[in-house]
Image (spheres, rainbow, N blue to C red):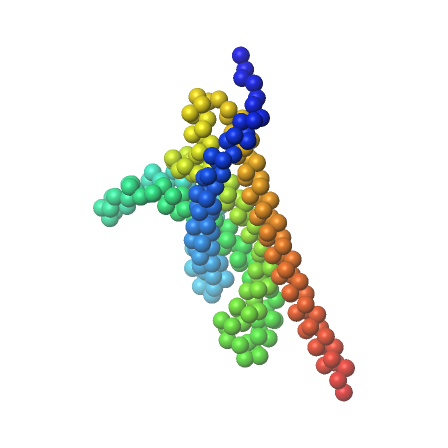
Amino acid sequence: MDRPFYPEFILGVFPRLLARLPVTLLLMTGTVIAGSLLGFLLAKARLGRSPLAGRIAGTFIVALRCTPSIVLLFIIYYALPELVMGFFGIDINGMSKSVFVILTLSLLFSANMGELMRAAYLSVDKGQREAALSAGLSEVQAFFRVTAPQALTTALPNFCNALVALMKEGALAYTIGMIDMMGEGSLIISRNYGAYGLETYIALALIYWAVTIILERGFRALEKRLSRGRRSIGRERESRRNITREAP
């Protein structure tokens, strides 16, 4: 006989799932920091003058983007300790599972970030950088004052999409025993001998939907704010050109 559906169980399980939300967000934060740094290096290699470095970075990105998340997670979690023990004689099996999860997700995230940063950088007109250099700015100043703000505005929508994808991929952490939101949901179902699975997964979906909506609205507001500043700067430059043209 099929068990009836209990909507009230969804509300009852929310507090237990939300208690693990900080774990999920912590994994995302660590992944974003490490993955963005590695992605920056990959983008720099692909944009640099060294063909060899560009090919290596390109191959690295393609390999990671073609590897399923769960496959890479199992390789990092099960194979990496054996390799480290074999080559260096160091036992890392006792390390926190979060380290292996962040390492896996950072590699995957870096591949997306490398392409995202490269595309955002190329979207900025090179003439603006050259104008900044001719105005007396250094390469670093021209990058942070002229190129980076415009590239950031262009990259924000794709960066938001990458974060949402990262959050969904992070749910795979429960497969190696990491107790985040998804792991807590699996424990709840196991403790009820497989019952209330549908209710638990609906509660998880609602939480993930809510976090996704918050991320999208936050990035949309930030994008509008940056775009407004960019348009005001553009209007100011256009007015200056008009004044210069009208001057005798």
